[in-house]
Amino acid sequence: MERTVHDLEQTYKEIVQTFLHRKNELGLYQAQQFSKILMEQQFSPEEVVGVHRAVVEELFPTVPEGVLDSFDLLLEVMMGYGLAYREHQSLRDRQLELESEIDVAATMQQTLLPEGTPHSDSLDMGVVSVPAYKMSGDYYHYIMDDNGCVGIAIADIIGKGVPAALCMSMIKYAMDSLPEQRLQPAALLDSLNRVVEQNVHDSMFITMMYGSYDPRTDEFNYSGAGHEPGFFYNAALDQFEDLYAKGIVLGVSKKGNFREYNRKLETGDFVVFLSDGVTECRVEDRFIEREEVIALIRKYMHLSAQELVDNVYQELAKLQKFTLKDDFTLMVIKRV
Image (tube, rainbow, N blue to C red; front, side, top):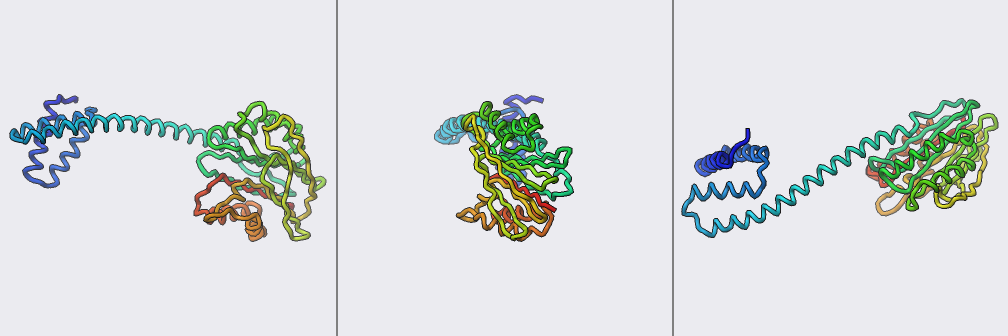
């Protein structure tokens, strides 16, 4: 029930008298409860000052004029404070609304990623992808055709948040619409490049690496668009090589001229795709070296592909005190 200003003044007067007479916790408790009533009645800070002044004048008729005048100054302060506070609350409400929208977008973004790795008699596959913030700029993808051929993709959208998520959805659906090129890395990147160049703002671009494995020949063909080089492990030689694939980033030029590379996968060989969040892991004041990443992979390469990527992620996250500075994606496909 709405109370009049007079009723509120009387209630407040009783609270002040109780506090001044007893000087115990009861008066403070009553004041706290009274503040809730004022909020319910939507009293502004300056109106509260006015109530306090009226009560003081009634309880202390001989209060010095200077004290009463000080309430005028306090009233002006509270008016400015009230305006700033209401603006702050409005901004806070808007921020909460945006965070809620971002949570929804982040959940939807997860639906763009594969639910798991495809089953292959020839390959053992594993992936870990962790966003630095709520929404990721990294994207990865697996596909398998009727012949058991496997296509894998990793991409990094230069940009974060909702724009990156929109680009991610565009890349996914563009890839889904090009089934005849899924296992032709250079041709697929060329088609995606045209899509990105026509639809993405000039301030954004996408790096990507795409590879396909044919179990009938054990050949792994791959092509890159300005993406972080991966690794190739040669089991016979027990050595790692950088998996370079020269090519311009998607969206910069209408003609990408992507080159296709080829590797033969023998039993025990494996391919590593990664985003720059892996190689740009910061340890104190420096980035880790690619050789350190290789050392971690070698440490766990006796495990399954999924256990390998999980353990490497845990080690690198621990080095960063579990505060990622960039999105982290690591993919491994092992020839078994």
